[in-house]
Image 1 (spheres, helix red, strand yellow):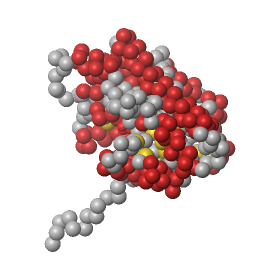
Image 2 (spheres, rainbow, N blue to C red):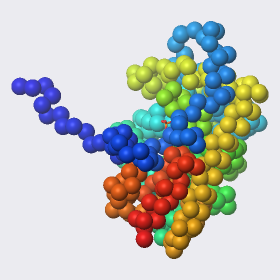
Image 3 (cartoon, rainbow, N blue to C red):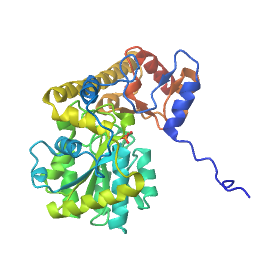
Length: 399
Ligand code: PLP
């Protein structure tokens, strides 16, 4: 008998499958607007200058010892200042339990495992739609998943009343996953005023907000502005959880660098919670990787490197915002009678175009343009050189 004869191939990841098909295409016109990784205006991957400079400073002085189980203390301190604010009271009061995490995914997963271990009867509410991996993460952590209304297909914007109804109708004290900014895949974020109403209703319902913050700085170009939702919840006195990632905003994708934080009642509770997060990490991966943590702490603790980073993250966000405008203008100039306002209203890496799966199939088959069938365009793959080609193709399949 075979040991593994019963093992069927796993379902293909929808996003990685797009990249595979793109690589196999030999057309010179081919475009990959599937994957969510930043590209420059020549379509090339980018290593930020601040990262290169930090690496030079680290080189030579770096040893290869293990980090503590909870990760680099310096990196965590800097991450918390970024998310919670430089002069944050909750940081001063040592109320935050935080550990270095394996980027945003690892932070979400560690939180999900923590939720299962200490709140075994709880559920997680995630938005419809959301980043597909949220489903996998909480499923594998054995936390039941519920969904809440988020997107309004007709307006290609936020379904605010549906969202508020679902918050009100969830049992008191539910866990909700919120995208702190640059919602993936829709690019639709609540306004500041709407965030205030959401926060208020969370208070009324005693819900727990868990923020997935994978794009701080990447949405508006300003990390402070992109932290607004979190700051509003802090002002209102919520306890929150937060998964930070440095994949996009520092371009550290493969370094797996992030931070998971949980705001507790007081310092005693934070110490207990942190020790339990470490206990969860120990049998999974023991301790987190060193190199990315050193890059982050070196950049954020040095005023010169930090201001360079702020300039570079703004540069990335601005290029994407510029491509949104160019794509919309190209479509309008082609005489498309449809409304493309949502391209510039949406924010962050993605444009949720509203194209149907059959239209996406035509883009791929007739124009060699690769993206997920939900119509999500990664704006990071759009450049000065290919935006007209993309606009023309979209116009053709949406006529
Ligand atoms: N959360 C959201 C909403 C994302 O879009 C992503 C990346 O695509 C992540 C988390 C996690 O990315 P990483 O694990 O590379 O930090």
